[in-house]
Image 1 (cartoon, rainbow, N blue to C red):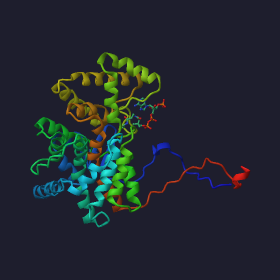
Image 2: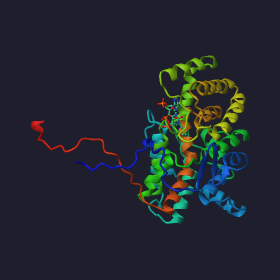
Image 3: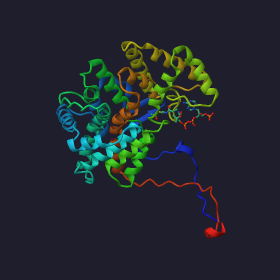
Image 4: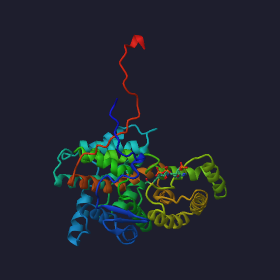
Amino acid sequence: MAEVYEGALDRGLEGVVACTTGISSIVDATLCYRGYTIEDLAANSTYEEVVFLLWNNRFPKKDEFTQFVKDLRQECVLPAEFMSLLKSLPYQGVHPMTWMETATSLLSHFDKESQDSSDEANMRKAIRLTAKMPLLVSALECIRNGKDPKAVNPEKSIAWNFLYTLTGQEPDPEAVKVFDTCLILHADHELNCSAFSARVVASSLSDVYSAVVSGIAALKGPLHGGANEQVMRMLTNIGTVEKATEWVKEALANKEKIMGFGHRVYKNGDPRAKILRSMSESLTKKAGHPEWYDMSKVIDDTVQSEKGLLPNVDFYSATTYYSLGIPIDLFTPIFAAARVSGWLAHILEQWQNNRIYRPRGKWNGNEGLKYSPIESR
Ligand code: ACO
């Protein structure tokens, strides 16, 4: 008889505490990074400052921040040889998140420190990845439109340079502020699927790039970061505000999941969704398409009244990104370009007190079988 492991089974690890962490916490409907609420950070900080906070467990002093920003901006470049390899990759029919996995892994081929696991080298790699991943997203957009990405402006923020390299136009200040807030809101989220995946890979003492690529792979799925793209596809499929209520009721009656709703941890609402909702409302109006927000609000009200589910981070980020003119299939890559800062914080934290992740599976297969030659089966 096979050994049957008798430990408790938690499908989806719902009731399992897998590590200690001091990066971000969720208590009821309050999300904090390093002890600061997300509302405080979104209103008062910048993405660069939040990245420093996530990695260092404190805000930077003025001189430190100047140096940190300088280090990040120096890495805001994709090497020419790397770019020509990127251009040679097929992209038709390839999901941009698959492309992001490949491109991020390819970056490690151009990093002389990719296999150096010292703390100093790991921090430099963290800076490199945080600076370069948004540029990977805009590089894809340029490549598939037959354009060369513009060089970044070293005086400007990651948010400004992302919008600039994506569109080739200097972005307006409100768009930059909104996008910077989106980067902050997406930077980390406790032990979610992709952070856990990155930590699992890191726990085998693999390298920073490999752990980040596993985070991208996990985020791709529609039950996780991939939901923001699916939300916008749902809205465009529904088409008009008038059709929204009926559409939702029918989908729920058919036991379909409405993308952008529900959460494993938040049962009383996702605080990020509230901030994104108000940005979505003002941006859709400004873009001359308030119907996207109106339709979202009808869906939100209907899902709440019919199913008692509240929107998560992905629901209103969809119309926010859409109003900024970002192509729908780049929504999840943008999420990855922001979340990389959180994955890196988790990878570095994992290595401070590492033990390899190795849970057990509860056996439910056959037992006691004997091999029989292929002729006699
Ligand atoms: N639409 C309709 N019903 C839902 C939804 C939804 N969006 N979310 C949960 N439910 C229902 C389930 O069908 C299930 O019902 P049942 O008990 O009748 O079978 C019940 O609520 C519990 O849901 P689970 O899927 O078991 O919850 P779980 O904690 O495993 O999953 C998840 C959480 C993945 C977020 C889920 O709510 C979902 O699939 N939402 C849609 C996808 C999505 O928006 N993902 C982004 C999450 S945020 C992020 O990762 C960045």
